[in-house]
Structures are given as C-alpha cells and as structure tokens.
Image (cartoon, rainbow, N blue to C red; front, side, top):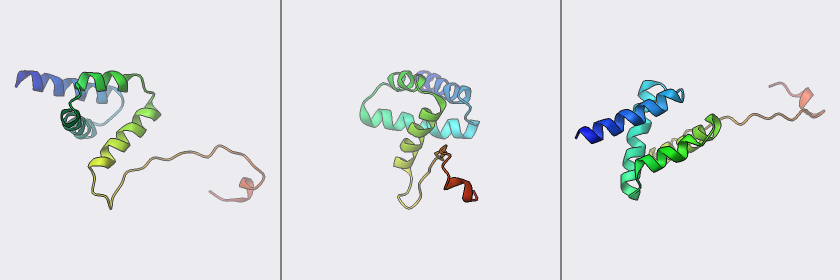
Amino acid sequence: MVLKKNLYSQLLGFFIKKGFGEQAARSTGIVLLNQAKLDGVNIFEVLDNLKGLNDSQLSQVITEVLNYYRVQTSVLGYKVSNNSNTFENRNILV
C-alpha cells in the first residue's frame, strides 16, 4: 500500500513539475497507472520515456492516452499553429 502511494506521489510530482494542474495531474496519473498495469509495463519505464519529451510532445502523448479512455463521441485535441505567411493568408482574418 505504501509503495502504491509513493508511486502515485511520484507521478503527481512529475506532472505538476511539467505544468499540469493538480486535478489534471491526478487524473493523468491514474489513467497512466491503469494503462501500465493493463499492458504489464513498469510505470517508471513510462515516466523515463515521458521525461525525454518536450512540452508539446508530452501534451500530444497525454492527449492520445486520455482520448483512449474517453467516450468515443468526445475527444480532446490540441492546436497546431499555422506559421506559413503566404500572400493568400494575409487576406484571411483569423
């Protein structure tokens, strides 16, 4: 029981350091723990892989994992900015 609580605290700390709110860190941690258990993967291996990602990559990975657990009629997304400056774009109001 103590090991699970310690593991959960480490997950919370990781996501809070990455800028997640406390509730988002809790929800994400629970989902990742459940998925790691289902896949038979050590959660520390998952965390090691997540540590190597930048903020944008981490956001995309977490979004995909959370979408897997959501009702299929509702999905999370993320904005991909369009940085092209073409002649046609200057006439379009954004």
